[in-house]
Image (cartoon, rainbow, N blue to C red; front, top):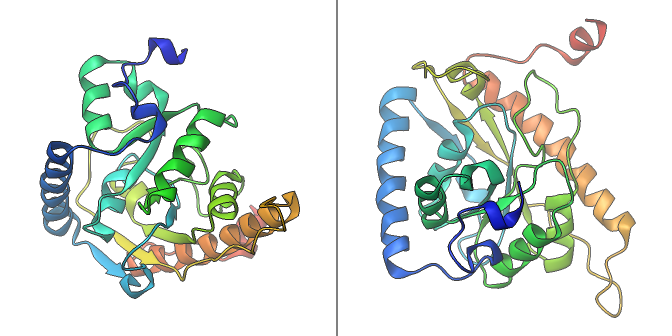
Length: 244
């Protein structure tokens, strides 16, 4: 699917400023989602003190369920921007809705330069941005492969990465399922990962991006394990998964 075939309002693929009405809509929808999570999933959030009170940051959660984008909206009342799979914009109505909710499309499984430019535009304005480092939903207790996108944006912009573990979401809505089970869901927010300062001239060495990405991967696995434990669905010990 080409970008010309997507139903993206003019400018939205570039991370432009959201309108007053879109901000109001986001707040209303987010409030309803939060109430749903509290009532249906007994939502528990740990580590809210790790979220900066102002300025840009990059929220990087584990990704195990279609619920994850809804769940992550509960961590702050600040409007967050989302990178979403481009198929969400294949339909005019859903394209309008996801754009109004702060999303912009990204080609999954590739280094989408336009999406990365939009991400840099968003954080340059001091807005929080959500980037799933795994790119698409995965399954199981181990973080195996992930992309350097969050680390790239972090190192280029100076914005810290906020790693987030989500527990219970895969059980609540497994891949391919259309039913949502009323299981406990937990969020564990990790400490900010600040990037190294860019070299003279603003150039960011590839090594710095890889190091920031490795720090994110290690933190994300620990937070995922803790979130699963708090949700009452602990991940098996690492040695057990290696043997299997």
